[in-house]
Amino acid sequence: MFHITNGNEVKIPVAGCLLTGNLEMPGNMPGMVIFSHGSGSSRNSPRNQMVARALRKRGMGTLLFDLLTEEEDQNYDNRFNIELLAGRLIEVTQWLERETGIKACQTGYFGASTGAASALIAAAENTDIAAVVSRGGRPDLALPVLDKVKSPTLLMVGGYDEEVLQLNKEALERIGGIKKLVVVPGATHLFEEAGKMEAVAQLAGDWFADYLGSNC
Image 1 (tube, one colour):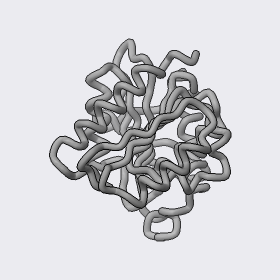
Image 2 (tube, one colour):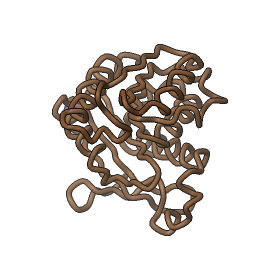
Image 3 (cartoon, helix red, strand yellow):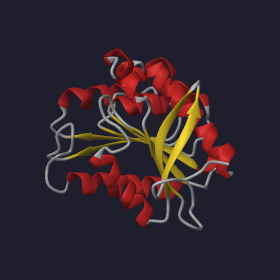
Image 4 (cartoon, helix red, strand yellow):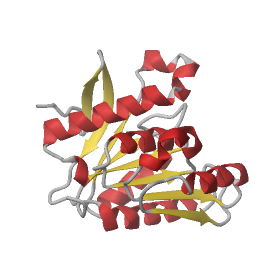
C-alpha cells in the first residue's frame, strides 16, 4: 500500500521513477478526480488547486500530481510530449485503482491546456473513465483518438480565447461520446479575470456530480 506523508503527499511509482502527488479521499466520496496540468505547471497550480478544493467541498476525492520529475521538466520538449504525459496519466490511474480500490468507472479527469490532451488520450484508451473536463484545453493535440473518447466530456474555453475556442469547436465534432462545449464569457486563456475560475469550478463540479459513479 502507498504511504501518505506531509499531510496528503504521495509518491507514485511509474516507469522507473517516482512522481509526487497530493491525494485527498473524503469519506463516502462519489468518485475521484485526477488532474492533468498544463505545460510548465505542476500539482501546485493555483487554478487547479482552486478547482480541487471546490470539488472536495462537494465530497469528491482529488489527486493532483506532477506528470514529470524535476529532472525531466528541465527538458522543454518533455512538456509537450503528449504521448509521454498521457502514458503517465494512465499509469497513475492504474496505480490509484490498485492501491485504493477506486475503479475507473468512479474516476474522472480534469485537464488544463496541454493536460487536456493527455486526459483525452488516456480516456480514449480507458473508456470506463466516468467523465472528462477540459479547461482552456488543447484537444486538437489528441485529434487522432477523439472518436474513441466515450467518456462524457465537457470543454470549457474563455470567450476571449478565440484561437483555442476554434480548436475546441473542431475537436468537439470528433469526440465520440456525450459532449458539451461551454464558453465562459469575458475570460481569457488562463481565466484570470474576477469570478471566472469560480465559474470553472462550478461547471466542473456539476459535470462530475452528474457522471462520477453513475457509469459503474
